[in-house]
Length: 245
Image (cartoon, helix red, strand yellow):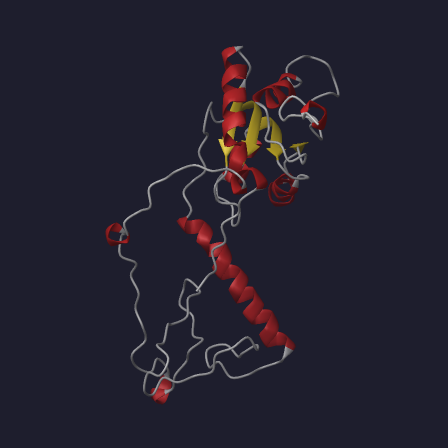
């Protein structure tokens, strides 16, 4: 099994929106198959024998003749016998990493949310930044700026085509409601010069803030493109001075 984690951010976590609870009866069936007989030579059970996808068999607990060890202690490949050796730890760690990396084969190719593939500037986001990024890019494009919006839904592993897509743009701007973690991932994985636009004041991005950052890439002023941090905007939320005493 491979764990799946859903990432969110402060704005989504503290927001509220009604949505219809899906009917479980309408879910597409999830195919599950269990090992029902020994899968090794001479009737031996190999609970850690992986297939070409790095997947090992599922065995229902208590299945006669297929009992085996489970737990967090490192185990030998195929047999599942306890094995603390450095070589086994390296092999099993690599196997687990390869299994997670293989998920990328099932992730849809990354698409351009608004704009075109390739150009002068891509504004890349994830999570709650979708709305302000999309509207800021839409407004900038209406003014004739060559800018596109890319919104990433799969953070790790990343879509297989994302690196090539980002490299088709001259510049990459990443607005985030943190200190720039996703920007760092993009730089590390694809060696693109992604620039941060960070906001950690507890306020959502205003469209105008991202629109202003986009404009710096097209104003002809050298060295001022983008921006590391968006200052607190007192107009977004009431100040303490506005509260009557």
